[in-house]
Amino acid sequence: MKRMSLPLRLALAPALLSSALFLGACGDDDNNPTEDDSRVTQELVVTFADKVVVPTYARLATRLTEMDAACVALAAAPTADKLTAARAAWRASRIPWEQSEGFLFGPVDSFGYDPALDSWPVSHTELDAVLASNDALTQQYVSNLANEQKGFHTLEYIIFGNSGGTKTVDQLTARELEYMKALSAELKSVGQALHGSWAESLGGNPPFRDTLATAGQSGNTAYPSVQAAAQEMVGGITTILDEVANGKIADPYTTRDPDVVESQFAYNSLEDFANNVRSVENAYLGHLQGETKTGSSLRDVVGVDSALDVKIRQQIAASISALGAVAEPFRESIRNEAERPKIAAAQEAIRTLHDTFQGEVLPLVTK
View (cartoon, one colour):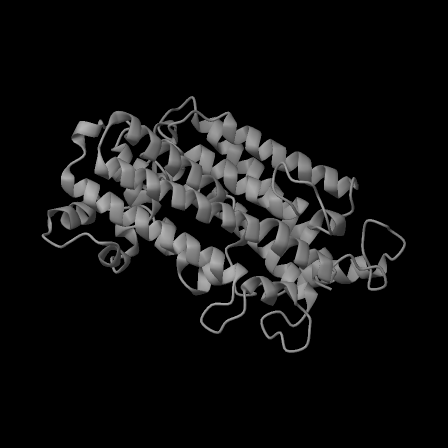
């Protein structure tokens, strides 16, 4: 599903502005930065770019390359083991992608990488039409297809089938294998381009890492202040939390329609949602899981071990725990009366986390 763009869209509501002004008046509270004691610094955005965004996209590019190799091997000599390996590579690739959705701004939005990688739901009718055609299914051909006919979820449908991986290797047709190879090659290409757009100078454009990291410096029209970049960071967080609670979960939960469930063929939906929350955690802490913290982060802006910091970290953990309490496959749980209260509880936990970032963290970076 193509997501709403996030081009510095956070115009301050009057109530939010009043909150920011109030915080500015409370200069003696160490947990509330003032104009003379601002924790919204250049180091904040540099750390975010170098320790969260670029490493996540690098991991995505690597795993998509590995997934492509697994699909090439499967197409060359289809065996059950190679099908299992391709499925494992698909799942592994989903982790960094979903953990990148807390910062869906910059090239992933402006160059259309997001919908090219992750449009859903897919249409079985449209996919069957591609398979039934006489067109050569090359990477270039797939690149020119509609977003709903390529990307993660089209590949998912081909290699997993419609029931969480019950499709056998003998059921993969030669045409499906051809489509699979072209899809994985295109995913690898898009992943490399996405990482490159942040880490390298491409087409005369500087790395977007530099655009973000130089926020507030002379000539930076994208981010005329460090606060503008920090707002973008918090906006990315609130946007994905809103999408998970009120889109990815709410749409199938409300309609009881499994066809609108993300990653429904691989039974990977709840893992996707949890990794979206982990993307928020990574952005907040300023580093990836298992990595050592260096530099400033949003947690430093909030105040390490402050009451608000403790609340945020507890709410992140509660959101992930609530998602873990729901039974997979999610596409069946939405119709299971015993599971529906658990789904509602997960929604509420994520909404609470969203409201904390929106109401209590955003004011700290909007002065």
